[in-house]
Length: 235
Image (cartoon, rainbow, N blue to C red; front, side, top):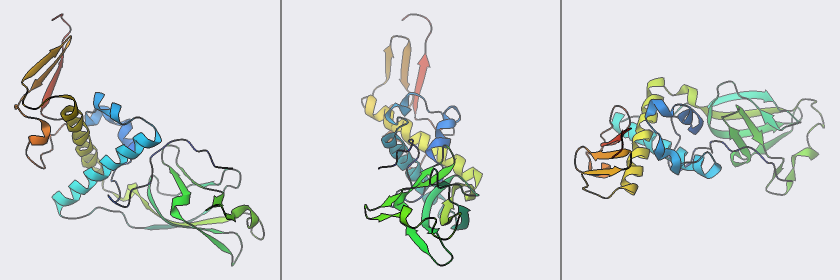
């Protein structure tokens, strides 16, 4: 029977590398980063969180390029009890950005290697969960409880806690800039001046779309070059 788990931030994509900020933390700080309407393209679903994580990964790589160094965390090695009721375990340094390796020790000399893809990371609720059946062939239940009453999980992972706070903050602002700029570029035509729609006035302060601005420029408040004004008086 498949394991049903709540939606949350997917694991870091190998193509873009680890993100310095997870999607759940980013969503909790939207007002700080200056993201509002533009987040409609990133709903709080599996697919939406995957898209948001990819933006955070892209923002992380731009920070690496600007600083000419990487802030990727070191591997952490820990051992924890496996909850046989839920097949979940917790780590000492959440949130988890990536599972490097995972092994279940069911006896003194007996272990089962778990592919990282079979470990679900739920940073929103603070646990990791192992699927009960691997590749449809190996049933873990056949081995658990044969010797050790409390099986252990030996896990190697990367934690977002190891990323400096100012780097995580910069990642959030840069991701907000990418999200807001992409939303405006998708919505508005190039080289427009000002648009009035009901009580909303949109003013292009510099006369170009955000994608035509200087490369690498990151506004302090994480927004694009467009000024939004909500008017209370009728047009």
